Amino acid sequence: MTRTITVLYDNSGIVNRTIGLSLAMVAACNGPQHREPTPPPRPVAVTAVTALDAALAPADAPPPDAGLAVIDAPIRWSAEREQLTLAYRRRHSDPDALDLAIVPRVIVVHYTSGSSAKATRAYFDHVRIEAERVQLARGGAVNVSAHFLVDRDGTIYRLQPETRYARHCIGLNHAAIGIENVGDEADHPLTNAQVDADAALVRDLAARFPITHLLGHYEVMKFRGNPLFVELDPAYNNDKPDPGARFMALVRARVADLHLRGL
Image 1 (cartoon, rainbow, N blue to C red):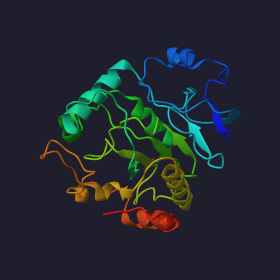
Image 2: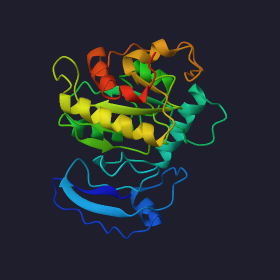
Image 3: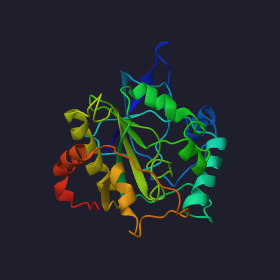
Image 4: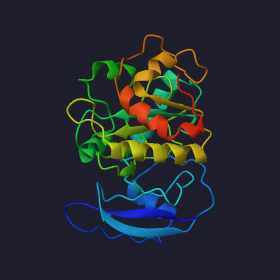
């Protein structure tokens, strides 16, 4: 099985990439970053398209099925972000955590409340949460992020390894992959292309990881009491509407044969 890795371009023109770089050289270019255990190397096919960002990162998890088009567009990673994320994990789910490795059991679907994949991707690059988001800032300094971002035309961007802890939902970050969808249910309603892309991505992730649950972000707080939900601060909670019952019903209908649980 081969994995299609996409060489990305920005507005300044073509960015040259040498695919023969060792992983160590790539890591040196991208700055310090956490490493989870990787499978044996697989053949890599290269294509080129116009996309969000010029950075290209090695895969840290089993590659998706060759039939699923996923563009690697990793968020910026640094020692500071790793330390802040680990501090958040220790505070909210595991005081003894030594790293950011997770075993995904849940997929949580979100929307961005905006209309631009590029803007969302740039926002996730920020290391620290802004002080204006008082409720989130109270929970920790590290910025929110997700593992995948699905644009309105159905394009799927992989923002970070599926097996890396990311701050995207209370209580489940230690076991959840987050999928963001560009849009909302008011000004920029989520599209049929996003339904199809989310379903294909869920199917792929369920084939590669021991996924048991598929949730919308709006359902997470109702998931308290499930053994998978872990939040050490009982006062830390929120009320989220995304991605909405309509969208979740459509995605679930397309993956009903997987028998993933909800609430």
